[in-house]
Length: 72
Image (cartoon, rainbow, N blue to C red):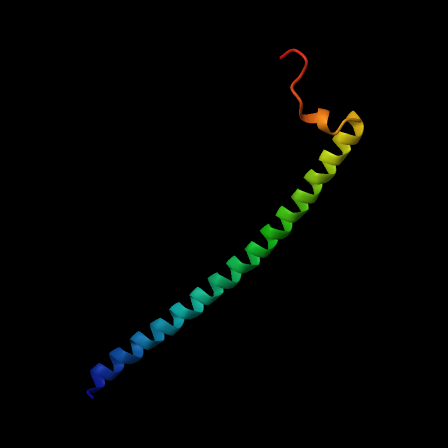
């Protein structure tokens, strides 16, 4: 193999290794963010469920909490 061809292959390999490292870092950051968003979503779901429970307790009628208002 000629030296120029070997140099070109080494340059391409170095660039690909850098690209793989960059993509791995991006995947890691995205996975971390997904975990944070899943935790936030679960917390919001629990909060919403607690609010719905409190609203139904305050109204005294669970089924009536979602009925149409009397003016309909």
